[in-house]
Image 1 (cartoon, rainbow, N blue to C red):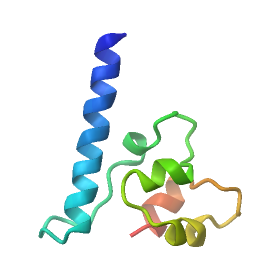
Image 2 (cartoon, one colour):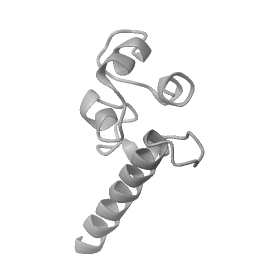
Image 3 (tube, one colour):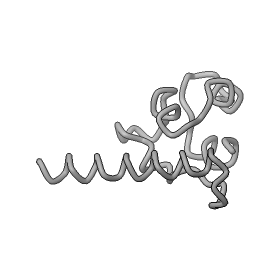
Length: 82
């Protein structure tokens, strides 16, 4: 259990550092972390809090939430969020 928590923490830190680098224009590819790394609760949808943790702005989240259910699907995240 402790190892699982450590791995999840490491994955989240890696995801956050990648998003910060992309947002800073550091020359790295303009890519967000993989959907599975951002979907912390594993429900196959992203909440606003999960999306914000990797740098997605609230306005962008709302624009890409096409069915207005307060969640982003993998498709919304991959093709809509830039």
